[in-house]
Length: 326
Image 1 (cartoon, rainbow, N blue to C red):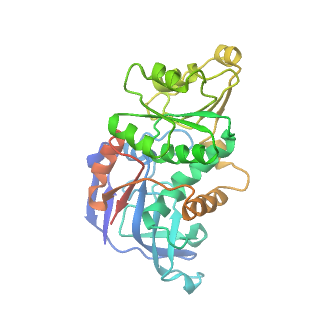
Image 2: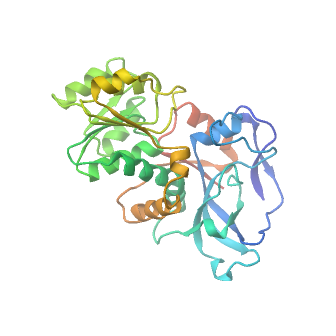
Image 3: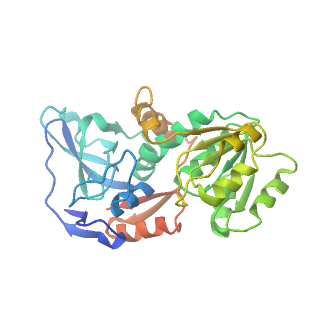
């Protein structure tokens, strides 16, 4: 079969499209004929060997990929044969072989794909969707919120904009470049602004006509995150879950006291130690997509072009969830 292989940590061109032996399921495992494999910004850090935090770098050589959707083609010992032929989706864990035509998954990780949900959408929700719901649970959206969403054209951001609108709150989406801004506007954002414009702060405040953001969903950090924090209303909340800019949003106790801010970090150990685990979030995410309440925006690439997909993601040249299609 075809798969992406990596023999050294480094740039995107370390990802090679090769022929490899077909996998064999062990006890308690299945083989999935992959129809879609998810790509996340974390995958680029894993590839570069710079994951840090609670995520150690995997041993090399490896086949990257943490999320797959497809059809079960083979089962191992101890697995009910009724799984064969069923459309499924699974989160595999760190760098666990998803960038391939076939992937091995523990049967305990499988979810049946809801009727009518495309593999690309299912794979978007099993990882990115579950993270979005975990963040939104902490954010505790209310109809009177004004929610500032940096990177609103990304995999998480597009889901946040939809969730904010569903809650009856006001969605303020920040995106990089006119094309992405227009996509965010089409998703239903009440305000959509290009954060690359030096005057974006004033544009947001002018568009809100006297109101201020009450909630910041910050996965970008850096200068954008800092400016966004500074325009929050008194008593605002900051939910932090990443720093795609390369730097965490800076704040001090003085910011918290002066603005009466509530700041909470959601992802990493807190998410992993979530009461009940992550599986309930995965189930909810798939149900939300199947019901049409959260519709993932997907940016597909051929499996053979995984390196190009990584580069595009790192250069912020993608919209929505990046997915590889064998």
